[in-house]
Length: 455
Image 1 (cartoon, rainbow, N blue to C red):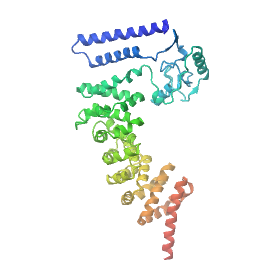
Image 2 (image 1 turned 30 degrees about the vertical axis):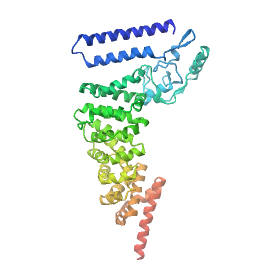
Image 3 (image 1 turned 30 degrees about the horizontal axis):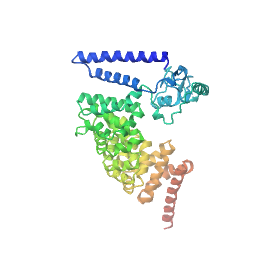
Image 4 (image 1 turned 135 degrees about the horizontal axis):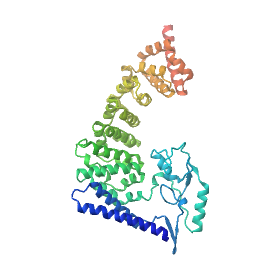
């Protein structure tokens, strides 16, 4: 390490030590010190520990010589030597993995200038890349390899949170006082949202999921709504990471607690519980676990309640879970067809709910119930009024199935056709599948009319 670099590191270490001394003194001197002060002390201490232990500094050592990485070769986000430099619309250069992660978190600005970007295209900065390559050759430093997985992009500051002791301390807090539980839950919610690499740590701790859910396992999940919301949201964040989906779903407490949280708690909690079930159901075995656990009834109830924040999460969860055929029967038995038809009639979430109805139409009980609940009229109205070709396609596909199963509905469809020519137009101008289904229905109606006329 050069004198300049070493001096900067020493200065930073001194700043951290002074801050730690101030915080510890406040804790020792004051009986009513704030819990946040203790947390700041822990974080400061972890930072000092990281600086002491870390081998991944901004300088490289070769024999008895040290080389400081030029500022223009460092990513403004990670503060480290860039592996795959790219240019934003603003002209600023970043390491691809870190700026892509910035975008994936929902940001649409340049981190340095805070300017809103006209587009998110990333252009390779070949000049800087060649300069970095040349610098590495001149100093005998191995050229860093680009990060293939954006989830592995971690800044030096974030590595503090990836120390094994940090996650353990948070999980241990969840079995302590209520205030400790709430603080740990908020921190876990924040870290699992911002750091994909932190989500991965849960797979390395066999008891992490039971420890996480321990405060909610007493049968009174909604006693402290803020704590419940933070923990359920943490489960949602964890379930986004593919390797955690099986880990969470196979925990005997996790799915039942998510189902309980669909019924009670803040609307954000209920919505996030539905979203968690949706992400977990990406794995086929999980679809069966979730269906057998009784999740469909509270999901359908949540959809029926009609809260804007929760309806879409409930609908997408129902859709995904019902890819498993046996769950289609469960959804029908729990009243899904009735609720969906009511919402479509009220022009609510029409796209999503027609997709669910089309999926359920492969189950005989669903088709029978659609016929009993007036689905034909509802579907014909959508075809007649909608401008969405995909919705028309789903509607006519469901109508085709109803026609093949229930001759009593032919009269209603024929009357609509005679009055408005709805299916004839669709057979001429719809999607390929819509044309095929509409033509199939018309064929069936014409054949029936011909037989009646002949008789």
